[in-house]
Image 1 (tube, one colour):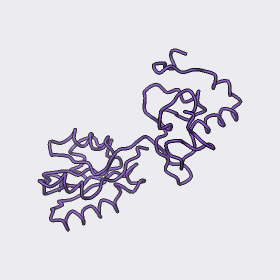
Image 2 (cartoon, one colour):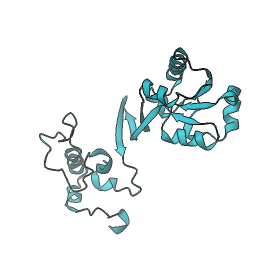
Image 3 (cartoon, rainbow, N blue to C red):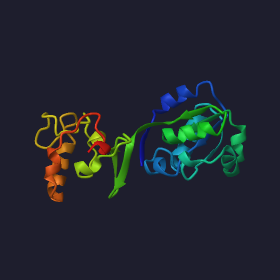
Length: 205
């Protein structure tokens, strides 16, 4: 799941200050689950834009904004997009980029893309993965320190953690405390003995 959050409405109005005849595209995948691009949010955005003098020509919510095949596929869902002079995409940066790639109409984002995360037991969990392209997560008990440690440390805690809490965000558990516990449960505390170099990859092991 791509974790994104809504820009302030004031910022969106600034982005659209010279635009009118706006078409809104939501996303029925990650953005809908995070309540920043599903049908209720798209409807609310339309209302707020119209109250502020903008003409919204229509909207559509594809199953996933990041997998829109073509402009014609959007036309099939709502032909009103042909009347648009600007498109507001309520999805992550991937969705914005995909939509921009299938049209010459100016495309604007309503969200900020924050991290790759997930959802477990009803809780949204951000920053599960740093998308580094060299996954070493096994060596850390299935927990990614690049993504979850604010300092992206690969060789244990920074020394500033206290009582299992992160030095940077004291409301959160230190990821290295969790990694150590997980490796103990796996019966692989020996993995903690490895010293990682910044440029090292799994293929070097």
